[in-house]
Length: 108
Image (cartoon, rainbow, N blue to C red; front, side, top):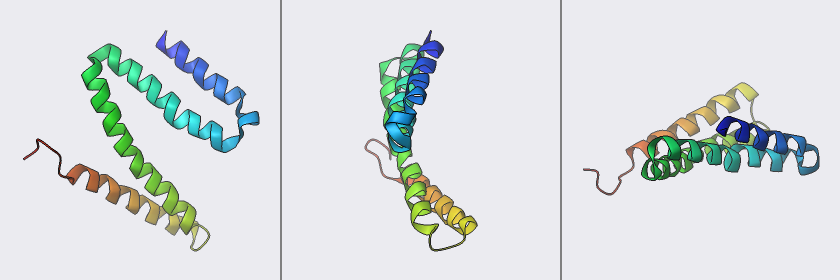
């Protein structure tokens, strides 16, 4: 049932992509729909506490994707695409490492 509902959500946004435009349909597919399917599945399998912790981490993980996209968008007009990609990948990796190493309450 979850698979069917997720498929219907994706199909609806895909069908409306012409009217929504690439930006809006891309944002809808990447975040609300993806996180909705993820949260429902994890909640049913492991409970509310695990679902909340996973979504919290996923939001922080999205910062790496944002860093990659912003860096790539800014670098492509200025340098060769392969180097823009390499630099964007390095920025994304640095953000991920910083998030892993960041001090957190309750962690010694």
